[in-house]
Length: 321
Image 1 (spheres, rainbow, N blue to C red):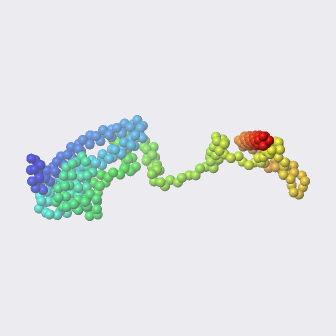
Image 2: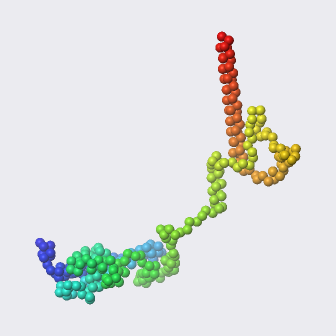
Image 3: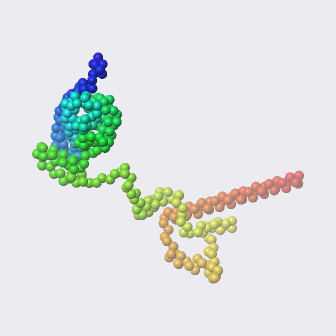
């Protein structure tokens, strides 16, 4: 029944009802937030007194946010009272009066940003029906032709407070409770420039060559089988003439009858770098593997010859029979 009566009421009656409800709720919220703000300031004082400045630097942002909302509520209350006194003027004129544009535009801008004041959304709907969606969109989107109060825009902004504002608020709380607080460390922390990890402009440093060499050596120690041995000594080849390992004849020099190895033995020993333990172990393993392979191939050849001899013998016996 009340909804039907309200729907049949004129613009002036509905606007006055919504404005009166908004003013009453703003006063109630201001008193409630004021008590919460005093309690929060006292907690910040206790943190500063006990030396917990890191927690105080974080909590002070919430206090600044609450103070900004309180200031915005105070301005909105004044605008609502001003529009309430000018409702008869709004009923008589089709367009929005110039002296009321700032107040109405500020109420429209604040309505979606003040969830504690649902009456502002109803007032916004009334002005949308009277002045059109273009007027409301200009105030909501902060177009150049909108007349939204600049203090309302600043107080309802979601940007983080500056370091100067946070330090000023902490000094005010310490002064309010007569606390002799040394703010040098907090001021140094606020003036410190922190790197933006999401910016993507941090250069990637290359690996130190010393660290790279150490990592390569550790990898070679942990997995010696993967790393190939350095060709510091020729690998001997075992032949069928019962030649032992390492008994390969040195190459002969074309200009002299002396072997090259005997001619330049001392120079080669002096110039040859010392072989580390890992390279010698790998070389010994390679030589053992080659010897085993040669023995296996010799055994296979002997078995093949034996099979061929038996086959030939059986074939000869068959021919005789």
